[in-house]
Length: 92
Image (cartoon, rainbow, N blue to C red; front, side, top):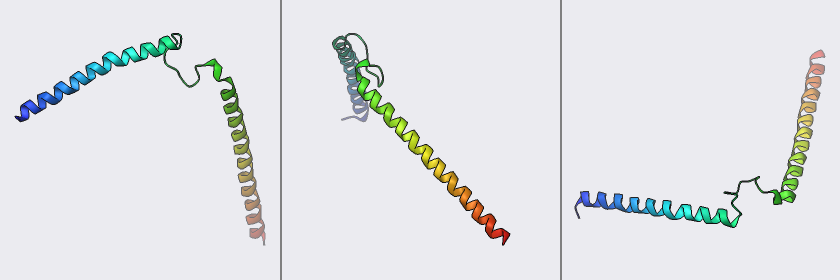
């Protein structure tokens, strides 16, 4: 097989594949929209029926923020205690 024929063969296969992907990919998206009632693609926060999951995630984020505040407070307290201890050793 001539190298030029091989290159043309690859180009033809890729072109046909892209054509089929474009043709049938759009049909699949359109069918999914029709099944969902025409809402289009589903995003993370688009549906209102995920209320319980959204609420659970909000509570988890709130709990993580509280834990972060506690860790920050502990870190700051340890630094201040360490600074006081160093100052007391300097005064000796």
